[in-house]
Length: 328
Image (cartoon, rainbow, N blue to C red; front, side, top):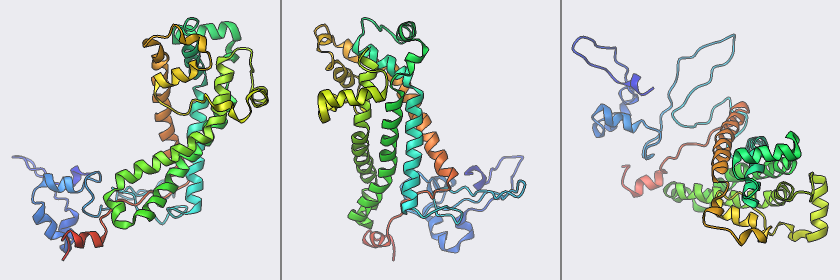
């Protein structure tokens, strides 16, 4: 899109001019004096640069295919008359949460076999020496169906986590923006996004906790329980509401995760070395790398399918422009 905005000059060839927005709009000619070269004008049109200017929408040629309505591509998110709801509405939050359920619940369930081997490598490294060895030992002892142990609590737990993580992120982003005000929201927008994501993950881990504890118990303690319906009543009868005290939340720190898993088997700690707490790192990297890519793909596909509006681009408030002397 950017290459089509400029004239390419050579000694033998001259392509037709494509005028920029500033050329068409007399009110923007003052900006061209501030940005005299093609390179700086290209940087000015970059939607990822500092948002000192309003981002301009880019129209692509309208094409019709069997009467279907073509979608417009924009350099930044703007409200479209074809959106199914308003940004920040109750329907918007519900659909974002639904996208989180699909993206997290399905992806984590799909990698249950790898997660099972990883957990067993961390709890019993002498028996499960590697990823390949872990798969072969599990299949030999429990059959192919044994690789799916813990799929039910995984699906339920991570669906709840996805609901809170993606849904609450949108809620907290708007909530914190209302608290800070328009000017501080613009100035501290990156910190606001971080605070909103951390707050959402806090509640997401609380929602995940019970099912994660059940999953780990099923996968790492042979003979304890084979299904969700067997495990939950047994855990509650033996340990009550404190059955989750050694819960692994969605920590991406292999040493901490390994230590928490080993806390359920204290006898394993006696011979534990520095390398021992990193058991399962390769499996974790493969698992999380796959999950992250698939989660964002599914979540964004859900937002496109339901025609959810994109968040508006950050724009400096007029009051802040006046304080900084950027407007007359």
